[in-house]
Image 1: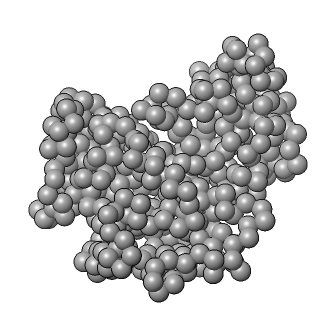
Image 2: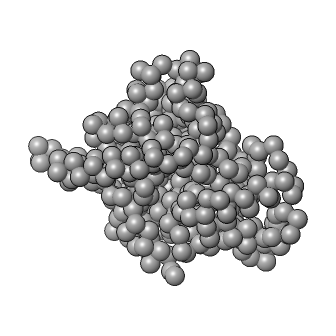
Length: 408
């Protein structure tokens, strides 16, 4: 199955969330979610620890928990009336078994998850969700670990979410990467575990698009999950590392609806990747005013001017970093003074990870112009990279601004 057919198949299986659907649409969606949660509540919990116990142990009040649920509801692009359902979905996370495997990776996404914020989401994930297997976190090793994986696959066949961290070598170098006593290649390992999964969540840019292991010259032939698996729903959560809020959001959406979220052309959830960094950047006004950092430490840098000339790839990167942020929502790369390197886009290491503007890079512009396009129009163009000059972008921004003014 080619990638186009794969996208069509998995997008058709996703639960669509459209803010333009109107009240009737959301009333029906609410009823479906309510029925889904009622069904889950009747199922036995796979773990005995409840979210209420975790919150009490960590000193997190119910009020703070509901504030978090409200924020997650907004992140999932749902009306505020769904907040009680999202809170209840979090309480029912112990009905969702998770198997997490690591392939060609640095464990950065696992680290990000462990250091995620509140209310103590790492505790919710690790203690509430039935995390049946995770090589980095589990105490078992060797044959005992393999037996734990086999038992989980059999017991929860067709029910578990498979989280995959790291790329998959499929080239001449794939024999360098094996796992377990049987010497399974990473590709064989992934295919075997994916065969019994309900859906697959590729976490981080390595698992989604190959990431750093796939950078030129790509000695192992590293690729992403969607290049290996073609018969299961796949949700891509790229970035290096992926934001824990987006991981939790995908799980909550699955618990709430029983379906994967609406995806873009690169199988990324639109609630997280339907935003362009550039459009929500705190420095966007400086871009439109033509105020740029020209060199590190200059007056423009001291005044938080736009970092485009220093190589910021925000105009061609889709992610919610500027909204959700990192480190307990304290900051993000641009906020700390460095431009976006487009780590949630395909081929970012070869195409975007340098400190010079796209105008100076030897990259062709995406068909039709580029940076002012929507995520769906622009997504496929990113497969071949999108480069655009400052003058062109500024002109497009001015035209867009004029149109908005005319509409008003």
